[in-house]
Amino acid sequence: MFCRQAGPASAHDMLCRLAGTRCSSPPTPQHTDAREEWGQFVVACLQDSDRRLVPDSESKSMSETLHGHNASLAEPAGAAVVPQPQPQQQPHWFDALDGRGHTRLHELAARGIPAGLRRQVWMECAGALDMPASAVACIPPQEDIELDLPRTSGIHELPGRHDADVAKLRHVLYGYAAASPDTGYCQGMNKIALGLLAAGLDAGDALAMLRVMLDGGVLPAGLFRPPMARLHADQLMLEELVARWLPRLAEHLHATLAGAAPLAPVTVSWFLALFVDCLPEPHRLRVWDMLFVSGYAAVFQACLGILATCEDALLRCATPAAVYTLLQNVHGIMTHCSPDEFADRAFGPAAPPVTVAAAGEHQRRQPWAPDH
Picture 1 (cartoon, rainbow, N blue to C red):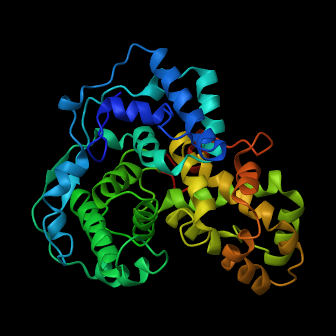
Picture 2 (cartoon, helix red, strand yellow):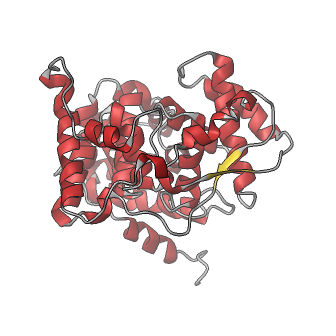
């Protein structure tokens, strides 16, 4: 396991924290149960494998690498520290998982990763811990980014001052644009970056995660690149999933909204922003926990979970305007559904099974796909 931990903790300290080592004052069961379950799970993975922790002297915290650049975060545009993919990654604890281990990991993530462990688990599962930082040349201001920064930072109140929030977002978005010039900046990336920062990641870790999400296989390749064929195919696949798993709702929507992919005007933003502006934060974090643990299929499962939660209200909608108004204000409806209830509906044992392979195959069947 290759640990790049934030702060002064050693690799041993990190393992002890993951293992749920008790402190001098006995914690309450409600606070420690989830952390200890995660810790026991991780330790079991380490014991069952031949991996070893890299000594603390051999590992380098990305936050330390970025420390010298923190003062420049408030600059309108400047040198960004861009994590570059590392060809040969070190092994991780989840590499040793067998089928039962993956099932257990899925179960734990569906119940929510403890906040104190979320950064480590997300970055570990996504592969962002293996992205060393390297400086790139200064890049000029980009109008699209500068226009989106103030309005994006207002979606969630991030820790710290508003100016600091904008500076963090600027650092992440300019850093990604510099690292991936072929894709560049697209709307939607701002909200994903915001979601990473709102989850407690610092600007350096958020940049590493954004890179691995968009270019490292967490999200489908080309999701943000014109003509966005994959995004279009995903909307059609979602329609098929709704027809299969929510047939009463699908029939009602077909009668009310007749036409191809009638949900797409709303659900496109769910895919591009990964629910940052349509789900309450506790619900959104559950989806992202599953995204990093189980893959892109979690996005479809979350969509089905939202629609299942809203099904009764949608069945009462008699006009297209009523349907779209309700779906555009789904955040309010979801506040009446607990995160546990939503996660069970979307990712629990009775949730519809969805695979990433099915989504990719659906795209390849479309007439606009490269092979056609």
